Amino acid sequence: MLTQKIKTAAIVILLPCFTGFATNSFAQANATNNAQTSAKVMVAGISGNSATVDQILANPTLTSSLPDSRVSSFSITLIPKDRFLIGPYKTQGDRITQKALDSLHSVAGKPVNIVFEDIKIIKNGKEIAGQTIFMKCKQ
Image (tube, rainbow, N blue to C red):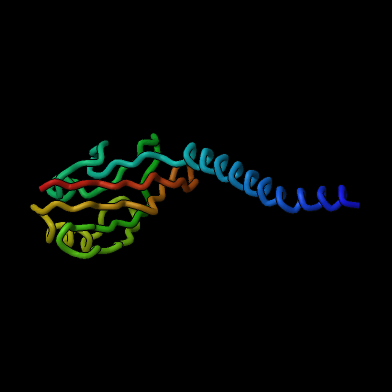
């Protein structure tokens, strides 16, 4: 009788551990699959994460690293050092909206971080997630 109670207690204690392990394993496998299906995106033709606001204003587009693909939508948020967040501005297509460009003009010459997220890419009629971009813009 006591042995049965110990076995039952062990199952009750260990079951959440096994469930957590299975959940984490699934999450890791899912993250690996998502990484394989996401694509790198460039802002203003710049492959790195550092640019000037003027470079982005000169070429305000996002491009995918995948051949025969195009950026179909994204969101942009500006994070200036001296103000609150500006945005997010949701965009359809591969070009930064005029409202977001006006906000970029307002922070030109100042250090600002820019986040491009919720990037969607179309390739062969299928939608693929693009990798989020965090850009540091110098003066």
